[in-house]
Image 1: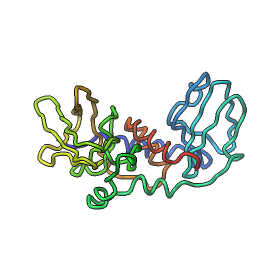
Image 2: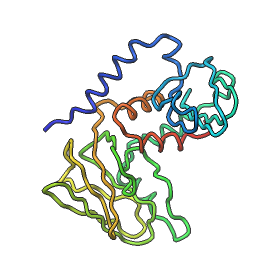
Image 3: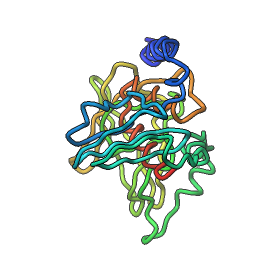
Length: 237
């Protein structure tokens, strides 16, 4: 079976980009919206630099633009061109880097008061997060956990198969069993201690180098957990 969803989404995204005007090609991407006006700014829509953004009380709008995340809260009228254009491309580069196993393990060790709380890499699969996960290397999937204090074993099940992975004490990463790699269009349950989350995977054939393009790819493939992760990591850019 071949991985095709990421390819089809990339083709669809490319076709959509061809229809954009020069102004919209430079527009910001809505990565989160809530409140009374959320319907006017659906996730994945674009906001032009000089477009008036009118929000009401209770509205919150997060836009990824120029490699940085802007958060607008109502009520009021805003424009991207009137706000800071500081870039967070360094944060994006760190978030999407393909780290070696040695470096990841060395950086994973924490003391009791230094537990890693935030997933530091877009390609690490959070064992506590449910949904569709985009991966760039299906043969080298690493699972990530927030609480590293004690050894823990997670069971990974799907229809007709079961495997497990163990995190040693002090480690935030563990490798998916290379002899039982995830299949496309398959839902996996990852759990320990009676609790579990369900995930499925989409392989990206091409990984964008710019934050806005990456956001569009994540949205096109339904990888909303990673979209939120990227938005939070670049907050304040």
